[in-house]
Image 1 (spheres, rainbow, N blue to C red):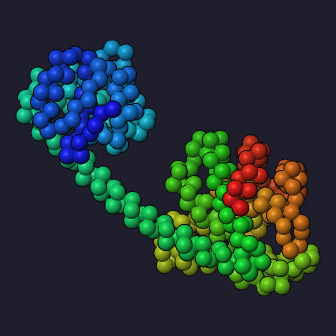
Image 2 (tube, helix red, strand yellow; image 1 turned 60 degrees about the vertical axis):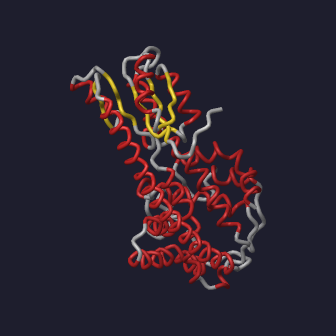
Image 3 (cartoon, helix red, strand yellow; image 1 turned 135 degrees about the vertical axis):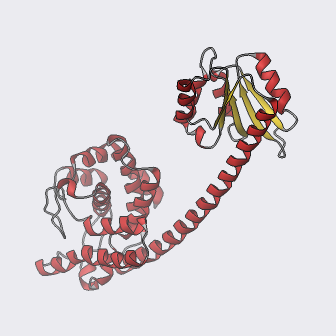
Length: 353
C-alpha cells in the first residue's frame, strides 16, 4: 500500500515511454509524490485506487491500448475531471490537436521539447489553483448544507403541526418523502434524467408541505370519522389553494427554489391527469411531474394507512385501486413507474416506520 505524506501533493504521470516518465519524475519528485502509468488503461486503475490523493495528472496522448484522449473522455464520463486537473504534454501540437484537448477539459498544454522550469511552474500553479477552488467550493457547499438544515427544520415543524391537527402520527410525511424520492428516481430513468440529484432532494423535502393548508381546515372536518358532506368536502378542498398562498407569501420574502417547489406541490397535488382535480382543473402535462409524483405518493400512503374514517388497505388492494382508476387519473408513465417500484414499497415504509 502506498503511503501519501500529508505535506506532499501527488502527481500521476501517464506516458508509454519510460524515459519520459523518468524525466518528469526527476523534475518533480523533490516536491511531489509520483505515481506512474504506461497508458490510459493503467491510469484508470491508478485513479480508481488513489483518486482522492491525486492532485494532478500529466498526460501523454499517443499511447497503446488507450490513448490520452480516450482517457480524458473516461475522466469526463466519471466526473473525475471536475476535481483532478490534467496537463497534457505532447509533441503533437497542431491547432486541431490542442483544441480537442481543451474541449476535453485539460487545464493546460505543454509542448515537447519543454523547459524544466515551465513544467515545475505550471504544475505548481495548477495544483495551487485547484486547491483554492476546492476550498471555495467546500465553503459554498457548507453554506448550502446549513441553509438546507434550516429549511428542513422549518419544514419539519410546519408539517408536524399539520399532522398533529390531522390526528396522525407524523409518519405520513415521512412516508410521502420516501415514496416520492423512490418514484422520482424511477421516473428520471424513464424520462431521460429530467431531474438532477439536487432537484430530487429538493422535491422530496418540499413534499412534506403538501398539506400545509390544512392548518386552516376546521378540526371537525379534518377528523370527521364518517363521509364528508358535499359542503364539507368543498371546504376541505380549499386547503390546496390556502397552503399555496401561504407559501407564496413566504416566497415573496425569501426567493428560494425550495419554496417554489413546495408551492407547486401544495397547489397542484390534487390535480388529476384527466383534468378532474382541483383547485385549477389542470390537465395532462399542465401539471408539473413532481406535483403528480407527490400526488401519487400521497394517495398510496393514504390508502395503506389507517385513518379516523377508514381502516388501512393492503398493499395489493391499494395498487388495484390506483391502477383501476378508483383514486383519480394519473400520468400513464407514473403508473408504470409505480408498478415497477411496487415490490419495494411495503419494505420501504416498514423501514421508515
